[in-house]
Length: 436
Image (tube, rainbow, N blue to C red; front, top):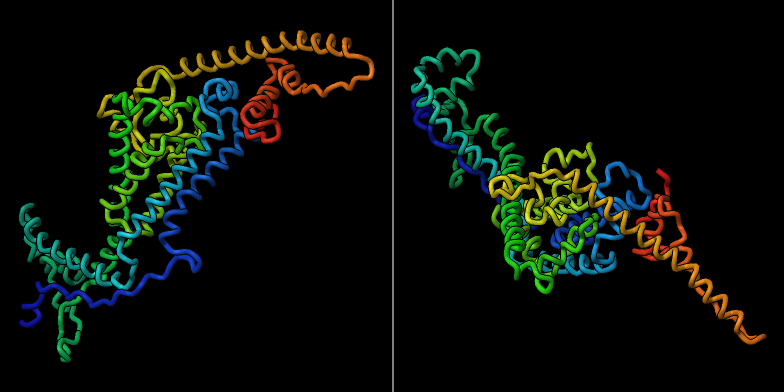
């Protein structure tokens, strides 16, 4: 018994381990490839969902902008957006592969050792319990004696982690030796900390690091004229006054690398994530950025309940009257509160004014072109009458005339016109053909 008491404060030993190469998630692709590809796949998968919502006009009541605004307010074509997004994703893939070159080769076999390491720290923490009990006026020894018959584990905790009956036999230099062992609750708690607690802390820290990085750089790009002007960085992204999902990463290539790629890389490195953890983080943050540019304010979106930085919040930043506010991205908005950059005005009135202005411009354009159409028809008729008999009649395209002969108040015709102007009549990228 004396020997057991003498060793009761000794820590259980850590197990030996042997590292082995980690088997890739897929037999046809390395983990480094999946790490680079998943954010791109996630980006386009979610973007296509929003694209389908646009095409079939599924939720017009939740749209932040009207089709007229899409047509009249954006200063960049969808092809240019698509091209620049692909360029940025190529840069991201190259950066991801470069990052993986500096990582140690993924290995496995150390989990039991790490769990035991945390269990040791739990055992050490129990040594503070007698001091805490004494501070609040309790007798640790007397309390342990009362608890021992019914709750021996609590009694051991009350005495500072003394487990005299918990021993295990291990081989040391070929001889069997009795050493302290961990209690089952210590191992269970250590396993939870290792498998769930530490990753949760890493992900949370990575979110705060990314938010801080993007807020700092994003705000600087608006306050520094050199970082904003068209030939350098950020003004390119603000050609989209009416954001849409796959335009989320429409940036100048240097801005995209500095803001998104470098920010995510720093979050990954500073938190000590594994490569497989980074797959979830990179893909999740990419999808969150797409959602913030989706152009819809869904009331039942659980992601927007968790993270207040949502599509409605970020869309304010894309408007001319909110461009110097709402810099936070992509998760929380506390930095806007702390930095005094949160927009506090009445947004509903400004959005309604923008809708009316865009619709008025479109109606005026349709009216002007409709007035010009009869004159063009007269010129064509006179020309045909003056043509010598027997001369062949050239084909005259009526595409422009048919595209502007629609009633201005017909919403279905308006949305079809938006599709035709942006993408050609057959592409129908915003082809909202339902009559809501």
